[in-house]
Image 1 (cartoon, helix red, strand yellow):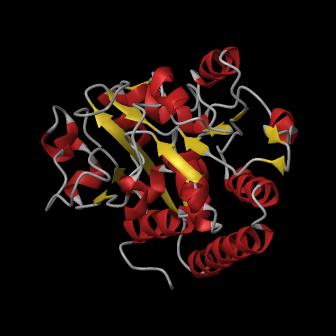
Image 2 (cartoon, rainbow, N blue to C red):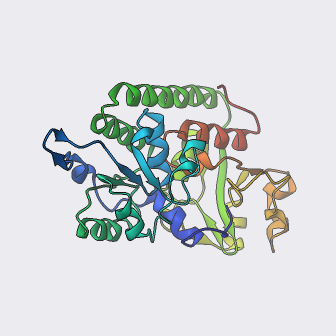
Length: 297
């Protein structure tokens, strides 16, 4: 990922994936505006790529009337009006779309956004999506709310099925120590309890960053001490497909064993950093980067 076009710093956007500052309790309110004939048609604005993708995955994309500027998958999402970024959406633009519900993922700024939206009389749904289990719960909750239970069930089954196949595949492969890097200056990595940490574990790796929070920064001296078998380069993920990693040219990196042995592996798909219905695809990308071989489809 690059810094260009983002409405929040890279670090805050990535930390948003792992933050849990509320529960699904608020999502149980199923009240929608009503008219003389009962509930009005759903009009939903989605403020995060994961919730936008989830709506389309369960077959409820037709209810979306707006999205954040970062919601770019599936292609149909890009045809929806943009209401700005997640951390600072344009409230007036949201109001103009007359939504019955505004959805998004939890993040450090999520509660303040919800308060603003509710202050304008808007219903909100901002569930946590920092783990595979919570992604499955998100799909189920959306399916129940938008009369798409069957679609949600199919999406969850497909996601969990592919994850199970990948886990069986990696079970026969050696466990490799690893560090997942999101930025090089400073060195910003996946730590314990983060979404990236879970993906590394599911992919058959051992995350060597075991302290400092979910998304800590470390110096090159600590990276040298950790001495990972593999370094997964997630710096440019989702921004095209660079031919090779630029991390080895960073100061001090040439002394790393992973650099000397050619084990800096690029992570190419944004699905790995979007805790949504494509997470099985993202896990496959992490597994391929870790083991230098594609897992089964």
